Amino acid sequence: MVAAVAAARQGASVAIVEPGQHVGGMLSGGLSRTDVERQETLIGGLAAEVFQRIGARYGQRVAWRFEPHVASAVLEELLVEAGVDLIRGGALASAQVESRRLRSMQATDGSRFEAHTWIDASYEGDLFAAAGATYAVGREARTHHAEPLAGRREILPNPHQARAPVSALADDGRLLPRVVPYEDLGAPGDGDGKVQAYCYRLCLTSADDRLPLDPPPGYTRSTYVAVDRYLTALIADGIRPRMHDVIGLSELPNQKVDVNSHGPFSTDLLGAAWAYPEATADERSRIAAAHRTWAQGLLHFLATDAAVPGEIAELVTPLGYPRDEFVADGGWPHQLYVREARRLQGEHVLTQADLTEGRIPGDTVAMGGYNIDIREVQWVACPISRFPDVHREVLVEGYLSVPVPPYGIPYRSLLPRRSELENVIVSTALSASAVAFSSVRMEPTFMAVGHAAGVAAAIASRHGSKAHDVDVEELRIHLKADRQVLRPV
Image (cartoon, rainbow, N blue to C red; front, side):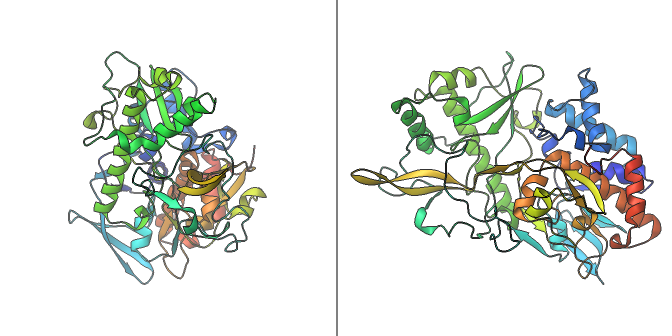
């Protein structure tokens, strides 16, 4: 959305080909508590304008917490003002490349689109992948980019780890669904291509007209046996269960709350998204449906089951789905939270060192600064010695949160290798390692990069040049005029 508006404001003729029927991805798709945390001074340009426009709807200078329908209305308003042509239902079928130039793409409905310059702003990187650009999926080994934080993590205490023992075995003696045997793990630091967990970011309300937290079709209590065991074990060990043992709730305007994953058993469905980046459209739909079923059932369990401690039940039971959000689907968001999928491997791959050393390259076009933030990757059946026996207990692997200083995102990280594609700019699934991308992947950063991508695409189209030949100084001059932040403030 931001890339399109930025390009149109530069005088380019712009169309968005949107695979679905909704605009804005996670910004209007349920992620209503913005991941800011010390980043406010890094958010400028069109990204800041979006949050300011949302704030104006509430009589505020800026809003970092808001209702999804308000974000959607602001984005639609921006598109109309900029004269962007929005094509809904334009799911990618194929891409036609000649002499390192993406000439056209065809949608599944038979529509065909041509452009001088393209921006792949998708979470999945489907366009650049179809056009033949090099990309990566999942976490690499520590040795791949010399990143100490890369690869499989040690299974250690952390804020999302189980605080009480949970048996990994079902009643029949087999492992619970989606739980990985400890023996199947690689060594710490090994790469395994796995992606962090996905979920749905939900908006719930305590309003009187709320829709109930009904169970999904086919709901069975046994699906949530690990949650039941965990909450029961906490109480048995004298540990006070808290909301963050299962989910996080953050206040929003007008009696609403944002729901995020938290703790070892939450709205995240660990392991269910590993196939998603390379999956077909039908397979992705099934993966999304599995995440929805899991989260719907979890909320119903937390609101109604006798095993849920009072402190948690008292917070969840008064909530329901809002009637004025995601109206077409009973309050359920349209966008699965794809925390990472494909990642371009282009002219410059951002790595851990770029972030932790706070590097500001000469071709910086946007700033990042959010934590290196990797959510849980897998549930693991760990052999835990509790004398006189060894028990198979569920622990989570993969979670990591490490602060970094402000760092620059270079224009080169938006570009496929020159030898592969010359007229494609990537604003979301940009060129980064898995570790670095876990910081970049926040919506304000995507928006800042989108702003840069839109201006660069307009310059390339105006001059009839390749994306790689855009004058970076000209690009930065335009960005500075738009109040994009290009250095720490």
